[in-house]
Length: 164
Image (cartoon, rainbow, N blue to C red; front, side):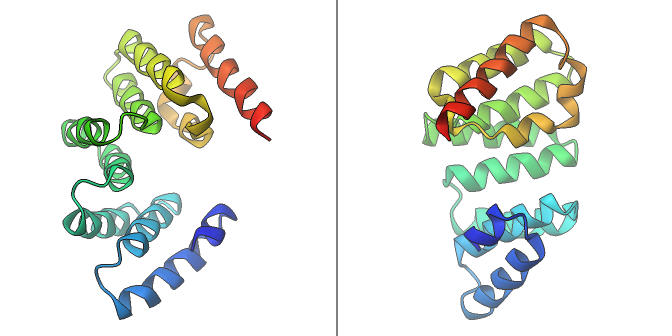
């Protein structure tokens, strides 16, 4: 599943996850990978169903909470998403991508200063773990060309290029 996910072969991820779930319906990795694949394919209802099952298996897992928050954002259920984000940050202080999700919520709420602070906090934690894909979210279109944010986006690009 991991290899297919990184190759953006989401249908294969779903297919393999379903096979694993036939054997063990509480396989956390299969549920979470499947939820993420559905999310990437825009099948938000299926993503929600799968990630809710994953949360029932392990309600404390930071990655599950991040995926759950990302799905909830798609449904504009921001308060619930923020609860997941808070819980994920309490469980994993290095959860940088969770702070980026919080910034997305901030932007949907037109709270650009708060979004800036959350992005900055994520960068201070561990820039190498930040998913650049999250910055393709439509919420960032509002601020993509603002000078203040350009510096943050540039820092992410520079640090990511060093990683390779």
